Image (cartoon, rainbow over all chains, first blue to last red; front, side, top):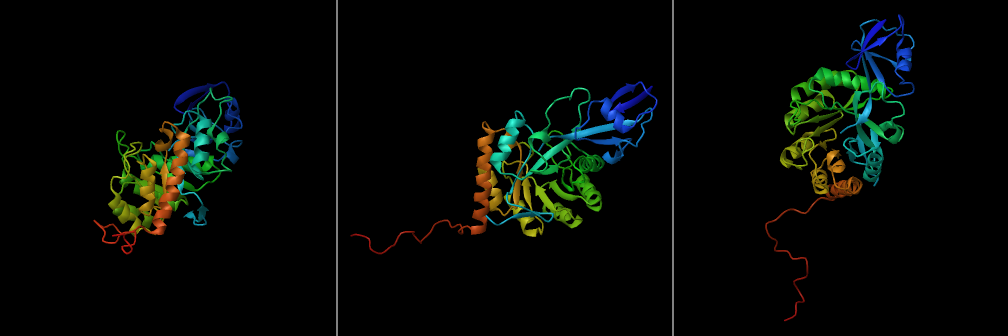
Length: 68
Length: 260
């Protein structure tokens, strides 16, 4: 079991090992343009498949929206 | 017109920059932006909705980044740290895109800029390689400091964000424009096409607006009006207006040949 804080909400995953890439798939965000920050550090898209998540990680997942 | 707006080494034929917020839907957003002729559009960076976004359209589908120059902003940030963090995420989101709009707010009621935090953020961002277009108050000293830090454009407010109050201090804007060696754009407060024209006649390099278009009764028509006002104001500025006189002893029609 892994608890990850995503955009301010705790999500529980029934796995012991998960990369950022597999998280993106699990959240049904595949193909969406987004940027991810893990514990305050940006995870470059090119490293999604390599970066492992740990229990208690804090993620921000953002996209572009309308604004002035 | 061959005369171009140059920001951070890139040329633009449109001097109108527009926001993408507050529209009814993305179709209206796109129609208004097309009518405005804008090439640079601002976007905000926000948390992605988790678990409810499947199939939901995104702004980027309606405004492809290949067609427009995106200007990610830091709207809603109240500290230099949050603004820098937001723009680093924006750079990652937009594949290394460097042109950004920095704004650090000081108060949620007025959305007045916090220039102390703005200066702190600008220093970090410029050092980090960003091309920073910076929203600020109409204080000429702060505007000059932001230029000296290395911002690529300085964007004083005409009046408060979303207020539509127009240009409240043309004299300060004039001082900022006279002192600046980088483009000065009015950002925030423009309410009507007349306001946009006045900004351009003062010598602004451009105007950035959102609410004036999005909150008009007919946003698409207003977008077209703004495009014309920006062009008219620019040409009026370049053409050089006649001097103001209280009265003129020089009538436009010949004084000779009058019947008697």
